[in-house]
Image (cartoon, rainbow, N blue to C red; front, side):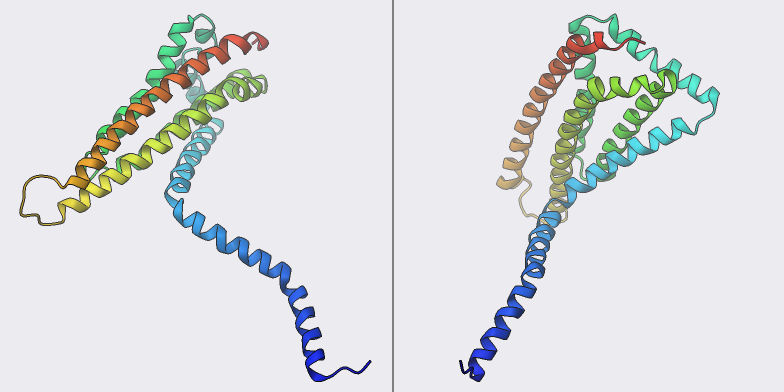
Length: 233
């Protein structure tokens, strides 16, 4: 069989395409990943702040002196023993207000044009609180506290953190929007229609956040009453 120049070119081209096809797949993945990462950069940043707070809080407890650990135990107030004596409604109330307090701070920060740093500090300090609590429980009960944390604390922490990070994003975006609007000279003193719509939608979001906060609190109490008997300290 005689091969001409065009046939050889086709064969070389096919081999080259087969050789480069895995690289093209990786390139397509990277091309789709980076726009997703850029579009969700704020979410990733807020999540990193929270995880940094958890890590810092845990490391501070693990490297703290014995006096500091004892002080944290007193501040924590016998967390496990105290919850075991609480009523169902008391657990719902305490969990609800521990999350709702942060939501209230974030809600009002959204209306402040210079509160961006305070909003970013909320997930960091919330992570610090969880880090201190987990580290203190581990220092007090040892490895037996790990299963307790995984089953009874981590689920509530996960969903409440997602809620707070979503609230942080909403507050931060509204605060930045209001800050930009103050830099624009308007002849009218009335706010723009778009700003009114954003504020209305912002308030509706926080009503939904409050409802989700209540659901998380109910789930936390149900989870505790169903599985707390499996752990004996």
